[in-house]
Image (cartoon, rainbow, N blue to C red):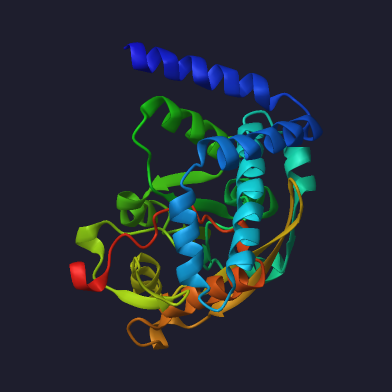
Length: 292
């Protein structure tokens, strides 16, 4: 009960912070950067190792530069996500601009459902919030729940406040059955890490053998729903452009593993262009093929 009470107080404080203008939050983000990077050193070993292994061709100076840029973005991202507590529809639409959504609407006009892939790149929370405001069909996002119930409820209120539907990963098939008679967009953050028991399929990603979830591929091949990739571009703090790219329009014709390798290759190319906007502090490579 005490922990739950502290969590409720924390959520209330986050709401108060969210009311501040983006310019003020950006100042807080700069302060947080110095705390995370220079004082606490939050997961610096994880970030440094991930970067070195992902970019073996880069010098130590180049790695350090990306590392600092990443922590600056992470600090900004934290306050951008807090801001979503009170962000309006108008502000959301101003912050995220999409290119290529007409491709999706053509499917919806024919009562077809489609799949969307993206990664933990840029502000994925703001992106999915804005996406639902721009589409005529239901936007359904597959996610992995967090353990703290109070903060899980807080996130759920943020994520669904404009009509998006969030479904826990293990409930994906049940959700698809519920909405099978109407067009929808089913969204996946396809770079999520599988647990050890699910780490059966490995591919080469950022110069390392990487375990991958096969959910997107299994659903795509069984339903033949076309897949689009959402490429996020960071314009400036709090503002994003998202390009909708056709990734695989006939999944049933692919061979096993092809779709999974394809969406990881899309993400890898984006990371190689501008690496600091991916979630480097995540322990993405804790499972190795030889240890499974």
